[in-house]
Length: 156
Length: 277
View 1 (cartoon, rainbow over the protein chains, first blue to last red):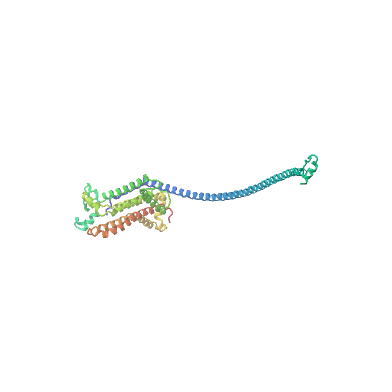
View 2 (tube, chains in turn cyan, blue):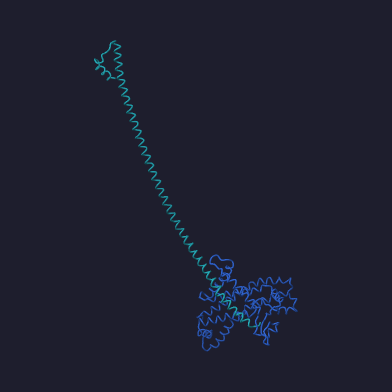
């Protein structure tokens, strides 16, 4: 165990190494590590914020969905009422139309009946005159018997 | 491998001798060729192998870490950057725990340098004890001690540097008056006992760098010694002892590097604490 100049040499190289380390190794490495730490903590913060945002968005989406559901239910109800309204309207219109058609037909029938009755009446008068002519074997003077004839047809 | 030596004590002696360059008694400078030469040189000599390995490994440490720092990114780090950042973070955590978060530009790089450099120097202990000395002998170099931390000059060189830094901070933070007062006023705070306090504190102060450096030296020297003793066994039996010892030594080399760093941090912390008692 000899103590000699090696000790001095070792001390000098030690000091030089430390100085070099102080200048070129320690500061860049520590600053980069700090930078990364900052980046990670920023990222974590952002993630938390994003999570909160997502939660809020979910909540508002739920609210909106509920609102939409309510609206659609309202719309459906409205549509139902409108449909039943239209149905009722259509029904009443159809009933009216049918009644009108029936009425028209009735009127026509009445007209037809009265016309037929009139015709019949005229025919009956003629037939009566003809029958009388045959019976009497002479012509009947229509003008002379007009009053009697119309009385007869009125009785029919 | 012990076959080339006259006996095992010569083998051990050879393995524990540094390659020494120094001044002979006649004023000439040159390499020592034996223990007698080294004794003749005394203080005016230098261990070339210690200097070479320590500077080589220190340069390796700085090269690796500078490379990592140059290409470092705050994004996803690569493997090299990861390893370097692990070391930096480990050192930084220990400093924060012991030293606190006082702003200090030196303690971080100082601790990192100590941790990695001492670790690398210790790690040379795991290279089989004969390989490098044998190659050196073939190349014509008579002595080659590979593990720089088994040289007390290396460990004391570092611990004394740390001690000088501690003294500097003592003067800077406490001022010469308070620092002087701290040397004489305890443990017995009475003026008549100041001389006694001074002796205690002075011995305590000097013991710090000495124990700091010799602890590392002693651990590694003993470890190296056991490797050398194991190497005296026949080659087919060596692994039975050298393997467990090497595995155990992995713990020691890391632990001693860590202890050296922690003690440095502790001493610097003490120098910064003004009202300790």
